[in-house]
Length: 220
Length: 233
Image (cartoon, rainbow over all chains, first blue to last red; front, side):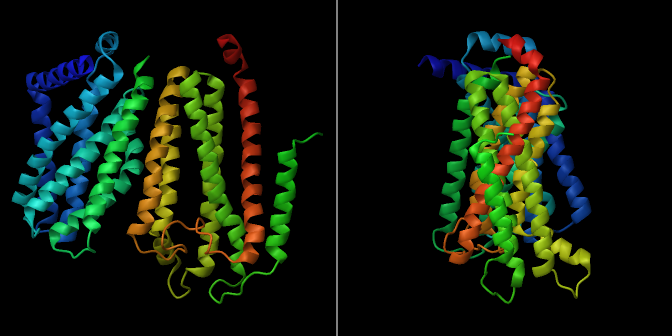
């Protein structure tokens, strides 16, 4: 119960911080809008395959930008304060949940603008929404852990991309493959379910690894 | 000069693998011809790479448990030699592919492109990218203890994430590379029994050679860092 209290207090702190410093949130939204606008101007109407691939690439970059700041904004003094009052697992779990929520909102915004500018080639849009939400959970989990690692080094932002891309490739490939169900591609019976379960298992293993490994990153 | 038993066995196994690999009979396949003998070198490099990376992660876990810098040096050295073995695996593969996959009617860059897009190579490339990132991460942290700790965490995290991907990607994409249904070389029915007689000793020999090189690297580094290591105690 105690750990849960800590976790919810930390989560509340994250959300409050975000709402008080709105410039970061607006910055993210503007980032999405301008990325999609550039895509629209350079691409025009995209075919389903290209549309799908570009959607996931934008998701990836949005995730890097949204999640990176979660650790970078923590000043050294504040980390020390957290160190003295909370447990590492409550801290990393609150970060994870907060980032998943943030990425979920950004994901919806991305979808709305993306379909508005680049059209909607999907045959079942709601399936695609569900898949993209599943994907945004996985992306934000992996990048939260990587942001925690990168925050200990110099040149954090570029380091996160270097550390993250090779790790995220398999998930991204699974997601691109899975989203083809929303483009009326025929799959073997049960294949989409298999991929979904695989992604969920990957998410679970990332959470486990984060809880196990974060205590080592945490002490300075 | 006294050598440990495993160093002697590494020399003997590699002598056997090179001589036997060149001379012993192999199945005659029209597509591969005598290039099939490259199996004793190319596939062994990947085996050695994965085994060395596994040893590296074991030392990383040990470091996280004990906070002894010696373990960090070992983890780093095994990762470095593993990466080197991976590069050798790439180059032996490139030589092999230039005899079997490359189409003489196409310009060289076209064959190069199709080889680079090969999905099985993507898995290997990811392992190398991850360890490239590992070394960049190390070089961007100044404080020794923190460097050791952070890179150990990344090593464990990346390695565990690499494993599912090595199993997933080959099954997702069509490929020219042998071992379509899963991982090449891990399927015991793929390989002719005559070749097994040379292949397994060769894997063992190359891996031991890799470990030998690593122990030399570790010894040099332990001498270089002697001051810090003795002050620590």
